[in-house]
Each structure stands twice: as structure tokens, then as C-alpha cells.
Length: 459
Image 1 (cartoon, rainbow, N blue to C red):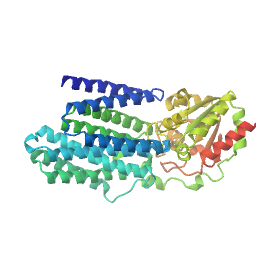
Image 2 (cartoon, helix red, strand yellow; image 1 turned 30 degrees about the vertical axis):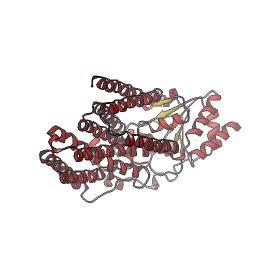
Image 3 (cartoon, helix red, strand yellow; image 1 turned 180 degrees about the vertical axis):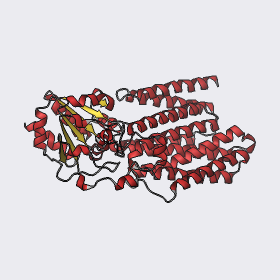
Image 4 (cartoon, rainbow, N blue to C red; image 1 turned 90 degrees about the horizontal axis):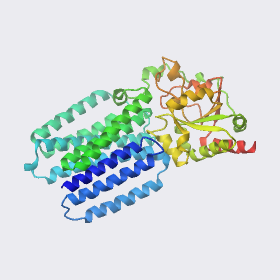
């Protein structure tokens, strides 16, 4: 038993080192590998520690699961990583829920101590909320229900379900019973749906981080059910890191965690009614072509590229790097400005640009790149919207006022590449689009950048 606990300790060290590695794009691959090695050690220790009646089902599960995982890893585009992360969070919650149910069924009542029942209750409750909440988040990320869905008396319904789940949890710990556990599971599944369905697409980065934390907490509770130290440690690390990441995302959006969970959309109906429509842009937008932008880039010494979700939708990360390389060969200093919540999940832009082999030292975080915009000749905004809106800094009446932004408007010239003038997830117009130093280059980001690369090469 001592050797088994030692193995779990070694696995925990690998997990901690892995998390530390994930704090930087440069060290993220190494951190991911360290985490995987730690998980392998934990799995081996678990299989050696427990008496396994038959390895047949375990081997079959590993083979099937590995095959599915390998297939998904090869087929899923990097642009679909947020959806995949949402599903993986849901699978983690489902695993905790199923383990809790199976342990209750298979374990004789004589072993149902109070502490064990508390752990099982938490495993089932948090696992169920994570499962359905993650599935709703996946549906939103897929575009099936991006906006916050308003349900009559939704706050009251969530309160009733939450209190109902709490009462059922206490009853289950007090007197047990399969029916109570079943009702608790149903209430928790419904609660997971109601908690996420009312949240708008703009808040999905926070929701994904929070659901990741939930899956970790459910796993930690399951570790107490199974009396497995490795699972307790692993789940606790995931839960804690998810909560920390959620707070970081909230800070980057100038939102409180409570307002995300219970406030619904970023912009209220009352605020939306006062927001100007198409007239905001009429006669004020200056458009341009690829050849015109190419001439600006030819004379530029410093260029910053600010990617957003439009880059991901167009799958333009490779041609973006091609443009950066083309400019760099001409002696232009090119950097990438990374906003913490650009895209659909934490680190979305880092992942996409890493796939295109953009050097890590060219990915500059918001706080570090903002002071450089005033010395930047040309900033190219690729499909980013709310995270570049000067209203967040200058307009105290704006719904996004106070949200940290990429201060691209301070550049000498700003080129915004977008399909149209449609608003971002916050649903408000962007002052950047009509600034004197801004020009719009309309079209699909990938196609536009390909034209821009050709135009630069022809100069």
C-alpha cells in the first residue's frame, strides 16, 4: 500500500508540473506530456492496487476509448476545440455520475457511512450538473443556441431546482434510498440545463472554464467514494485550476462570476433597446481593398495582428502566418496581440496560432502589447469585435464599459477584416469601425488574407 501511495504522490507531482507548464504557450506541449505521464502512473497504480476480477472489460474499454479518441483527435479541426473541450467536460461529469450510481448499487448498505454517502451525493450532483451543462454549452458553441434563452421565471425555477436538489441530497445522506438518489439525479440534470441555457455566447469562455472545474470537483468526490487518493488529488487540481481560470476570464471581461451564472446575457433588454442600429455606421465607414492595404504594409516598420473568432471561423491561421512571414522577410516587425477571451475558450487564439507554427515569442498578451500600439504603424484586426471596442474604455454608458480591451485604436492605421458590420457577442456596435484611422476590408478572413499576401508579393 505504501508503494501505491508513493506512486500517487509521483503522479501528483507530474500533474502539478503539467499545470505549471500549461501557463505558457512555449511550455504547454511539455506540460501536456507531463500530465499524461502522471495520469498513466495513476492508472497503473490503481489497477495494481485494487483486486480486478477480470481485465477483459478494462482492456476492451481502453481499446474502444483509445480508438474513439484517436479518431476524434485526427478529425476535429482546431477551430472546433471549444466544442470538444465542452464535450470532454461533460464526459468527465458523466463518468463521475455513473461511478456514483454503480457504487451505490454494488456496495452493501452496511458500508454506507455518512462520509461515504456525502461523497457519493456530491459526485452524483456535480457530475449530473456538469453533464447537462456541458451539453448545452456544446450546443451553443455549435451555433444551435448562441444567445441567452429566456425562460419564464427562470431565476425562480433555478432556485427551486437548486433548493430541491439540496433537500434531496440531505435526505439521501440521512436515510439513503435508491428513489431519492434517482430524484436527486433528475433534479441535478435539469439544474445543469437551466444554469447554462440562459447564458449568452459571449460568456462561453467563462462557462467552459467553470464546467471544467465542476468536472474536477466531481472527480475528487468520486475519489472519496472509491477511496482512491490519486483521483482525489487529480480532481482537486482540476477543480482548483478551473476556478482560478474562471476568475481570470471574468476579470478579462469585467464581469463577476455571479453575473455570468445568473445574469443571463451580457447586455440586458433595456440596454439593447437604447443601442443604435445600422444608422450608427451610415456614411462613416471607410472601406479599402487588398492592394491599398499592401501598400500601407510595404511602408510599415511595425505591424500587429489582433486575431478573433473570425480567424477561427475562416480557418485562416495558416495564411495569417504566411502573411506574417512575408512581412518579416521584408524587415517588418510583426507581432500577434492576444486577448484572454478572444474566441470561444481560454487560450483559443494561442491554440490556433500554435497549430500554424507561429513562434511563441510573437504571441504577446494584452497587458504587454497595449503599450506598443501607439508605436505601431498598422494593426490588422482579424474578426475580433468586442475585445477591440474603444467604448469599453471611453463610454461609461456602454454595457461593456470597464472590460479590458486590445487598444488597437491607438495605432497609426487600423485595418479591420470582417465579413460585415455585424456586432460581436455583446450585440453592440463597434466605435473602432468608424474611427478616422480605421479602414474596413470586407470578406472572409482566409480569402482576404490570401489576396493580401499576393498583393504584397507583387509589390
